[in-house]
Image (cartoon, rainbow, N blue to C red; front, side, top):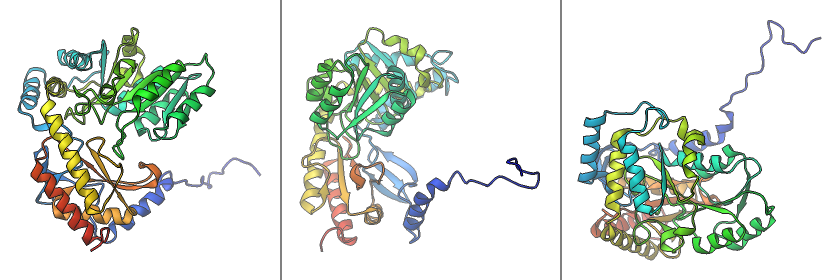
Length: 413
């Protein structure tokens, strides 16, 4: 007998996809009744920041994160077209090789001006910004204390960096302090928070949490992806709104929300920050953003500095939709509107999918969010408002939700 396989024997075949079988079955069950795929919608034409053609009909967009409606801003589009003419379609290189054009320096300067900080570093996506910054500054022997509801990109950055990860209950200041108290005083510590949490649209008590973090000698990183451009007097996010931006060591953000294009960034006042350009692997080993993208981002960011009227209108939209859906009988993720995200809690995934499809037939697109991405295994219909939604559109949306809720039995007749 031998442990070696003979010529006629073959090793047992292990299907590496078998781990996904429960998800495959869930998707099959959802689509077995002929229902539209809630995770595969195709937009055939986009007319404006708030309207697209889906399945051949005009549809109101309420699930795009296009908070400030900058995707069709004439100045933004013109800047992108000009950059295409002047610099071509792409850089074909990393930022540390041939991938730094004048536009990349310009967008980083715009970010420094926007936040009033000394350093800015732009990544190809917001996901890469978290992945790169977190994994580079917190490594083996360091500790990361983070909110349990943190975005997937934050968790992945922690895993890649090999630091000791210590989660705490969502938005619980006392639980956060308890974790920090147990960490050796001499250890490197990074506290990671988000301004707005994307699933329920709730905000963090940043001012109190940052004070606790500093008490224990921790550095602080705040992800403001869902608040930049909208929250705060100048649109700098929740940290600005709570008057603690100066206490934040690193702000992470994205261009794919309020800025209206694609890309990610980190801004900081740390005097040694520029070394990150040589040691951060997701920055060093990734092709840089196309010149047309950074041109649109620069123009958008500079316009967002003076977008007070848009911010005020978006707040009105958020308050109106939150109240309208609550009055109609829906369960909302927050007691009061806290951001541009309004999360409508569904009884279960099956009902949520049915409601999503009923809304699409009404002419409204929202996001269906499901476990494990959602907190407490909830199924959500996540609405993200835009500053370009008119007051009339918001009223239309409330009517669509009410009719769909009754048709699916989620609301009483």
